[in-house]
Structures are given as structure tokens and as C-alpha cells.
Amino acid sequence: MTMPSPAHSRAPLTSPIDTDGPRVSLYTPEFAADPHAVYREMRRRYGALVPVDLAPGVPATLVVGYYTALRIFNDPDHFPADPRAWQKNVPADCPVLPMMQWRPNALRNAGDAHARYRQANLAGLEKVDQYGLHDTVAKLAVPLINEFCANGSADMVRQYAFPLAFAVLNAMLGCPAEIAQQAATGMAAIFEGVDAERGNQLLAGAMLELAQLKRVEPGDDITTRMLRHPAGLSDNEMVHQLGTLYGAGIEPQQNLIVNTLLLILTDERFGGSVLGGTLSTRDALDEVLFNDPPMANFCFTFPRQPILIDDVWLPANQPVVISIAACNTDPTIAANQYAGNRSHLAFGAGPHVCPANSLAYLIAQEAIDQLLDALPEIRLAVSPGELTWRPGPFHRALTALPVAFPQSPPLPQQS
Image (cartoon, rainbow, N blue to C red; front, side):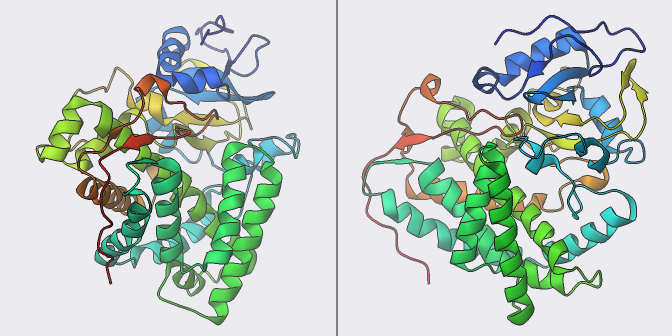
């Protein structure tokens, strides 16, 4: 994609937003096709802070420097996550508003409110039985594999990663199938930015129904534990906690599974050695979390007053977005050896670091291992250049991952 000419010099007292010059568009198919080339050009032209558009007419500052990102992550006083002052002037039909707007949850609050919501979320997540979750993923993966193993081909996005991530999250939340389906429809609309406001409403309605169900019929699940937390979350607050978990537990989890499978199937360092046992699936996951994290640009903050950082003034009440993908590949920290390296920012950092990163690793690793064990001769069915990435400023997501393999008999179902 062609980069615009620099809208400002990197001399002090400039701003990446208060400029009449062009900004880099993060929502185009051209950006989605090769974002790393764009990140390199961004860094060359602008340094660590880049003027971008998240959607038409929605300016932001994108952080592409690793150490600058860490400074912002760990300074919530100057970089709070509360967007309410910003969103006052954002139209209701803005396609990125549902992803960025204020909600009564840990992601979009600071201070005491953030602590209250985060503690309730931690209470729900900490008691997840990881050994039991391992078995849950295996039990849900086998029937999905059996649906396509005799065909000799499948789409790993539509037929495996999405339904598996969806089913595992529903199991952890104790969510019945009919409520879950409405939630999935709403979540998809929000991530795609297509009819996002209706998606918002569908998701909220499903989450309210789940919260009310669990008040009457509690279980050994995340939803019930959050409801029982001393924070005393209301139905409305529970809607937004559960919506956050759906946002984090389906689309990013699906993308992590798919992007890691793509690496394993296309990179000789991983393909032969993962299947042969030299490198683990966990090593492949780590490389993806560095190079193609499922949420490439995320972690929004909104400075309450103008602030000078890296010789650039960031304006008040305008979004500052961490480019996780660009920061992870910042030449100042880039390493050729990813095995065992956990210094990536794929799960954030600081007080808003993802509280479920160990669960995300476990689910993705088990999902991939189940597939490779069942279909060890699996291969990509098209050339890598034929794959297409879904446009959007936030995610790193393939439209499909077609694979082929020898036709195989169904696996025995786990009891």
C-alpha cells in the first residue's frame, strides 16, 4: 500500500492528530494484505507515534515503538482507558465505536472502577480448572474433526477454529446454545464493523439473558462466580463483563489458532519440527503472538490533557492505540529466537494486562495438538499468496484457511 507523505516533522511540539495532512488508513484491504510493510514505513517516516485513521474520519495516534508502548501501558494516570470525553463527538453509526466506547467493565475504566470490575473478572477466571479445560477442549474438538476428516479437505476458520473457540467459551461461562448463538452473531457484527450497532444490541440482549439465568440456576462456571463476587455486579454490569469475555474469547482465540496453524503449515522451521516433536506447538504460538498477534492494534487510551511523549504532543481526549504487532517487531527488541520468549505485548501489559492469557494458551495449544494428532499429514490446500486477510483496524484475521489431508475415519468420541 502507498504511504502518505509525512503530515508532520518529528520536531518537538507537533501532534500526530492536529494536522491537516493525510493519515495512514488502518481499515483498508491494502493495509490488511501486508501490514508489516506498512508498519516498517510508519516507523521510518514517523518514529514511534503515527497519525492514523481507524475508520473514515476517526483519527488516532498509533504507537509502533515497544518501549513507548510500555511507558503508556504502565502510566494509567496519564493514559486512562476511559473514552467518554472522546466519544461525545463520535456519531452513533461509527463502525469502530462499539469496540471503543465506554462500558462499565475493566477495559474501559480507570482507578477504583477498573479495580472493582477487574477483581470480579479475576474471581470468575481464577477458579477455572485447567486440567478440566484441557479435557473440555479435547471433547469439543473431536466431533468437529469428525465432521470433515472423511472429506479430505476443510476450512480451518469456519469448520474448526471458530466453532471450537465458541463452544469452549460457552462451556466456561455455562452458556446454553440458544443464548450463545445470539451472542456470536452480535460479536461478529461488532468485529467486522458491519451493522455494528445492531450487533451491540444482540450481544447485550444475550448477555442479559445469561446473567439472569445464572442468578436463578447457578453453576460451576465463570458467570456464576462473577455474580457471587462481593463487588455485587448489577445485571447491566454483568452484561458488559460477559460481553468483554465474548469479545476476548472468540474472535482473538479463533485468530490465534488459525494464525498458528498457518505458521505450522507454511514455515519449515515449525512444520517439520512441530509435527516431528523438535519444537512444540507452544513455540509456534509464541512466534505468532510476536509476529501476527490476533489483535494487531488494540489497547486504547485517552489522555485527559495534552502530553509530550517522544518529542510529540499527544492531544487530549483523542485515542492512542497500541500497535501490538508493530511494537513486537520493533527492531530495538526484535529477536530471531521466539521459543520460550514471552516478552511480546499480545496480552497487553500493566494494570490492564489480559487476565486470561494462560487459558488462551491452553485452549489454542490443545486445539492445534488435537488437530495435528488426528490429521498428521494435513497441508495447506492453496498457495500462501492466495490467502486473504479480513480488513479492519484491530484484528489480524484470515477469511479462510483451506487445508487438505488424506481421508481419515472418524475419531472415537470421548465420554
